[in-house]
Length: 107
Image (cartoon, rainbow, N blue to C red):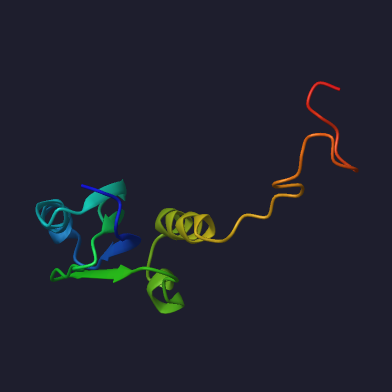
């Protein structure tokens, strides 16, 4: 499968449906990227989208009321996923190694 879609986080609100939800994601041709059973996973979804009983999909920010219902480990997972979606700030990105104010590695 090509990476045409977007990554989303899946919040499974009914823990007993976790395995069947991820099986449905895979059967739909979507790629599961990471898992934190029994409530969270991330996957790359095609443009066709996806829905499953007992599961919520978020492509951008997970609402605070959803995050507040999660345990500490799951909140950390959501926070890391959201942080990974933010643009990176890299001083000197695109500049040559000897640009003013920067020192090449090993000097």
